Length: 260
Image (cartoon, rainbow, N blue to C red; front, side, top):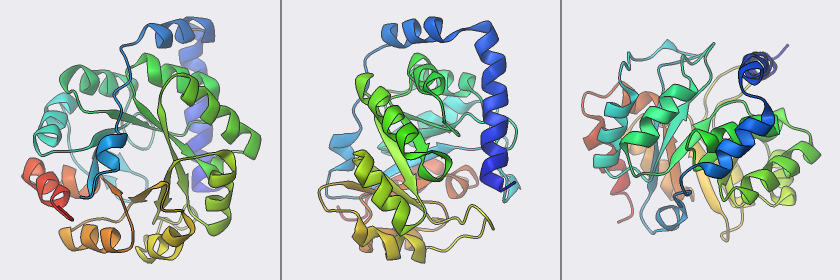
């Protein structure tokens, strides 16, 4: 079983426990009653680099990254630094997150919030919206094409932006065929967990200029962010570098000034 397969299996098992407490119909009703979606696209489409700043306690590749006792406080620092959106890891087993983190962040900031998890079912999309998410992550490698198209359609019906993550040229093609507009390239190899910023540089030109390009993973320095911007990134998603930085607000501000 690959790392991704293991992560998806764990996410589905945890979801099954939540479904026993809140069945799909209940979560769908909560999603319909959630506050209006906050649109990240105006900021993503601006000339300067947009930063999705991540609340991330740990990862399969690096283990424990940071103690984050108060996700809302970290989110406030990100927002003060000019983050275009805030990503919240809600996967429990390997990333130490949860939907309570997302709810706490949503209640603290006006910035759009992304649910980052291993989403493979409609239930997870609806519960993301019910918890206040404005965006959600879909990983092409974890989904059959019909699943991808269906989940994109559900997100669209809820007014959400779906960040569709790719790792290969074929996956970029699949994302485009499915109708994705916000397309990420993950610089991390999901089989080896190794990172290569050249991954984005190689695949970015396959994503039309009419779409939003997001560079994910391995962006540890300001120079890395510049490299992604120069390669065509409209947005960078940054986690480890920010949670380990002594001044995350300034770190976000510095990256957000690129291209201004």
